[in-house]
Length: 468
Image (cartoon, rainbow, N blue to C red; front, side):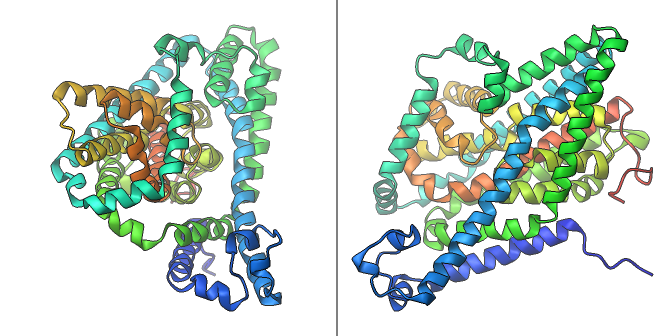
């Protein structure tokens, strides 16, 4: 009898669609007057469950609404929190086991070299695509001066905080300081604080060192790391059963809060960002796969996107490369057919340093705000923008909104006032969701290419490849 079970990625897509629909309806229909009809005149205080005379007439119906709102937010936050708590151990154990299992420093160097070259090339191309689109469309000319002033006023305080965070992150730090910071003073402290770049450095160094230790002594350690990585993967599989419900709980509040008025005001800018991201996703990555994979190890775009759908949908809803990492690894290994050896090396590294969508986004933001402030950029400044956006993307944390603080670095490179961040904050959350999909897909495409060139990619139909 035919199996009528709905595939996971379709369930996630249904949850995503329902979340968008509910969010739009609530944004349009649920107004202050609606709250007032429930006896709530100060919704912020009421939702925080703080006493207020303005909400003295709120009854059981209002309390039920508050419970539903809090339950929805709790569900989404709990799901992301569970995925993020898995991110550190899976990066640590997978990278140690991945690097050590290669068994040869030369092989590790070859795979590492291919990986870094693909990461760097795709990131630079993404930044160039962003600049080219922004200069061609000129989205800054579509925002009226009064709209610009309104957006600056509404988000001034938030923008000031983001700018201060960005400046503090780079204050008195030159290139040498940033390189030094990739090496942890205390690896256990780095693990405790979730400093992913330092964790990657520690795991790679330890994994490489294990390749130099006799196998009789290193094998037990590698087996422990493999077993721990497998155990975390089982946790991921359990969590993914709740993903459709969690995606709904994450998306609905975001759409409710963002609103359509802000989207309309920054519509052309948002479309330019989306056009750039789509170009990377459906042009750059497919071309890379078709050019660099061959024979029975060839990865067609159709095979790639079908296999990676669950990870991409989760990336969209979570806006976090780190949170999506366990699912991305599962999709690459079990659906796309990439060997565990390559997956465990490439993807944890990519989740930390490969941010193609972020590089494109930072480039578009800089050009857009320069146009708003009527600041023409020379060819030299645009070249500096590509370099800065690429380097900033490498340093972007794989968590929601991390690139906002990095915008300060990029904007000051081309002498654009960082206060302009206030203009785009209203739509950043939605665009953050989109660029995370690009970041995660770029990691997976690189893993597929590296696996193909190393003969470590299962052809479709071979046992273990569930993406048929």
